[in-house]
Image (tube, rainbow, N blue to C red; front, side, top):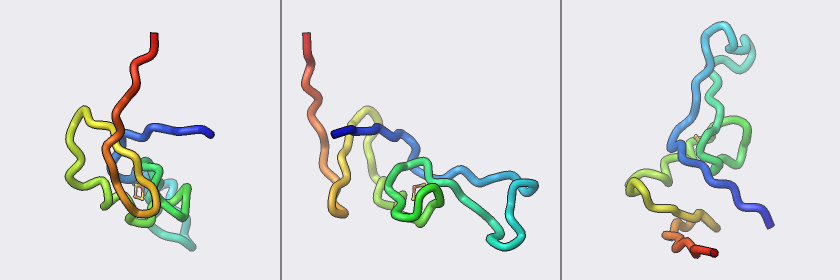
Length: 72
Ligand code: FES
């Protein structure tokens, strides 16, 4: 199992010079929640209300706080 931590709560919008004529405005997911990665699908809205310094886990559309274990 691999867990990846994302701290971003929204996408990166590419410069106008990077925009594809067919796809138009492109936003790249930085929150890790999109089902259409690498593109943003709006799933980052689930991060609204996150508290600074708190780690969360998102599974099955649910958000829960994660308690970190401290190892020696
Ligand atoms: S930034 Fe991840 S879904 Fe929008």
